[in-house]
Image (cartoon, rainbow, N blue to C red; front, side):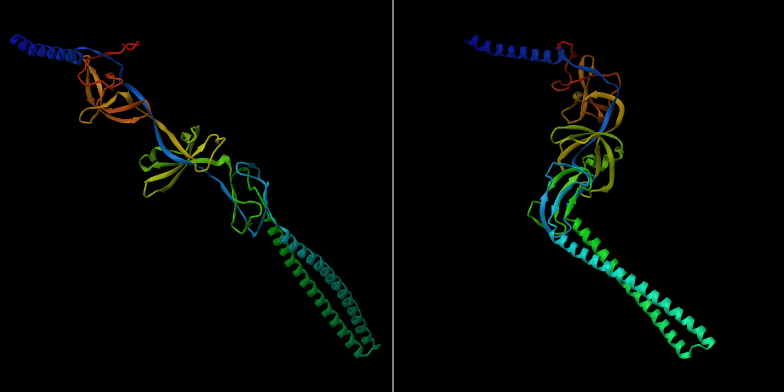
Length: 384
């Protein structure tokens, strides 16, 4: 019994030593197959990424300019329209009647103008006759065939004829002025009447309809909204810290909320920053507008701002030690050794190391699960 009691601790201690030796061998003696890469000079594409919303450079709101009732709506949301196409018709009966009244007044006034012209011609003829009689009486008075009283009568008749001509001309001028004023009134009536026909000012697509048949509208009431798809772009928010890297004309990719990925380019950079967010608006134009779109639709934009050269390693090679320092696992004498590094530009696959690593050094390409001090060997193509 005593020997059995002594044997148990010995066996337990031996088992612990065996396990510790095995763990030590696995930790320090056994070489784990890991993917390795050589740090080399490479380049990383720099991108400025930010959220945005789909907008139109030329949004158009079609509104009523008179008080009337909607009589007909010829389009609906999503319809493509052409410039000059009639979109909405308003009730024009009152305006047509007013225009007819003005037209009748124009006809009557035109006749008055013609009468005034005839009056001028008559007064001119009477003046010519009075002038001829006056000249004749002057000659007869000189030869003694008429008395002075006859010449005085001729002079008075000449003055009266001249006054009649002046009066006829004044009457004609007044009638002409009335005709001109009435013509302006007719043009105004025609203009107001044209407001009952709302036409498309450009080629585009209807994006909102806010008028229905029977609706009474007043000046300023919105009827339709439309945009030109060729002017669609994305208003992207860019932080001030990276704005210097963005230039007009740079290529960009636009991912809409629907998942559609479309190419584009930087079209405009604003010069007004938001005081709260410290962001500016950058407008990204589509190379080809999307077939289906929604104004204010959410989008994600990535602008290609060029490439930066340096020592490149895979993103999966980056890891952190217990102190939280960023680094890589460098392979030295078949062991993984943690090396603190500083990184610069990065894309979705690799990052540039700006300090702590030299070209030609081998690093563990996938640092997850690998600890500093472990023996490692290059993983073969078969993964062993």
